[in-house]
Image 1: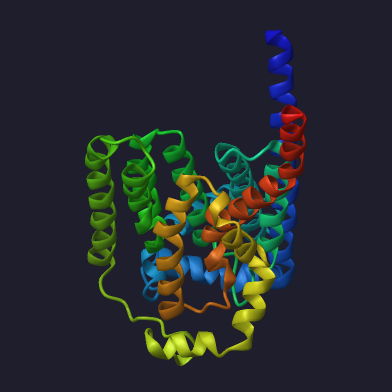
Image 2: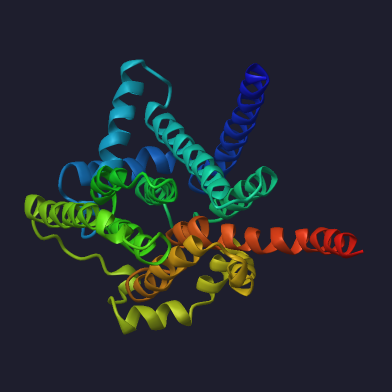
Length: 338
């Protein structure tokens, strides 16, 4: 019996890892196809070297984790004299990132009580959106690390392994400033979705994680100094950038290409979500969209993969799963009453 269960678990793990790898190859290939090898060995390399040399603009200069790790892989590939070692190292790194995202996403869906089939469907939906998120972008290793860290934090919170939020926040803060909501996911879940008194247990972890984020955020700016703020398309952060985002056709075209109808399906079925997913929604989604509407280019839809993976796709699938199961439950109830 135990051997049969182990065999079944091994088969399932093989399916999930295999699916993640195949979909990761697909998503990365779409980004590489849009950019080209010459771009990777030219502009992409220059961007990474600029950050490593402390010569990049705000906020890119302070997103140091991904360039540091990618450069290690690049040097390793160079050591073994791999042809086009720069492009090859970048591509392999992104394939690994995308594969990890999709495997974590599958596990996250299962933790939200979705079936294996729905979780696999969700992987495919997420990969399809990821493949369309390359507008005006390089390989954006830090953005995809952001998705990894949020999914990993979500898994730790759902499994109540709260202490892991501290090292996750530490790494995520070195990667990208948008990771600042990770400690707050822990706090809000403990307040609204866990048994009474949980917040007292969680509060010290939240405080340490949040202070860790602040120390890294401030420390990076002290180490590298003040950098010139990048002004995207000549539009300043605030109402100027908001107006640009809202009245630009590319914003809505690209958002629909990446997110599709799943935010709408998810919100329509909001009452069918788990309590923890509702809390994650209110902690993450409103502030995420507000910050990026006023402070980023919304047509660069890779920026919205975190809410897509954390909330919209699982929410839509939970809604559809319960809707599909309704006829079976109704039939069983009628038979029982009969």
